[in-house]
Image (tube, rainbow, N blue to C red; front, side, top):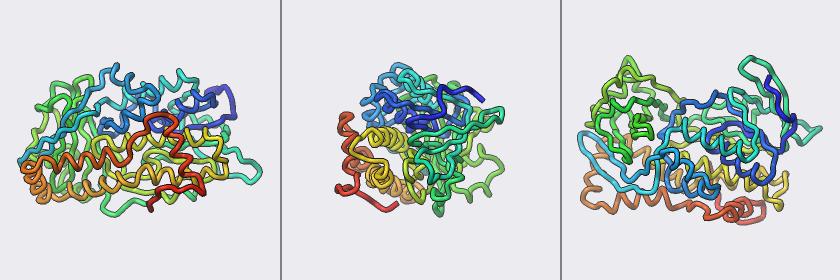
Length: 407
């Protein structure tokens, strides 16, 4: 077992994706003692569209992080291209960037370590059941050799993703997979396989079986990420064959070497948690549940939750006994409006005839797709500064008015 500098922490953060790293950075910069643990060895592949939209970038700007991504070669995005049944619709979508998760997550972790966070990858974490004898939360850590150590934190932030196991001993955090949920797959293809995807353009191909997004990454490789119907597996003998069917139906080119690519899978996507917090255990990012996101919405939710969770823990007017109610209301406020639109778009993309009609309308009245994009970007305007982020936690404090929605 690796030797940590302490067995007791102000905050233990489980999961070093954007939500976990952003929370860890903010807390450490405020002087908190933070341990950040990650199950996978870094850098690691992540099933993801690799897009950060303006909401995500504005949140990262508050911590002076977005410039680091641009310095690392992140590609500015200016267009979204939808393909369906041989038709194409181009929609202006400026303000976002594309960067591989391997590079982005490593940059955020490096910023966390620079801020004073103690980081350990290749380490699984398990949140232990609550104890009446102590308010501190115990976390069991297991390294790659199987050695086990139990540590404790005054608070624990769980950001271990869709199928994370950190809460398997905490029955109060049950997960329900929604009916008709799609599963995810993703792969990176080398630059020479590019079938004509423009730099700075998000391409999406839709069909009866699902939809596939593709972007050129900072090193010229192409990221393909998809959401596919589980029933579609019966129609093909391999993942690449299945995705080829979607591309051909949409009228998109099939890249060279597509069938030989290494595809990484994600579990059934759309799901929800029974709760977002219990005591000083707060869930963030995909660990709170998931709705199929578009144009970087998933990463925007993650970084906004990471910053807001940190601000809640740093807010002296919110006591530990109020964390659960405050955080539940905060998560609902952050997700409510945009989740509605992502559900609508998900339903829309699963109906090829409706997509074709929508594309025709979009060509005739370009303002319509532009308005839909604005609904994704504008309902939850990013906080302009740290004090605004603090106001979210304060507005969600019991006794204050807060926007809430059922989940």
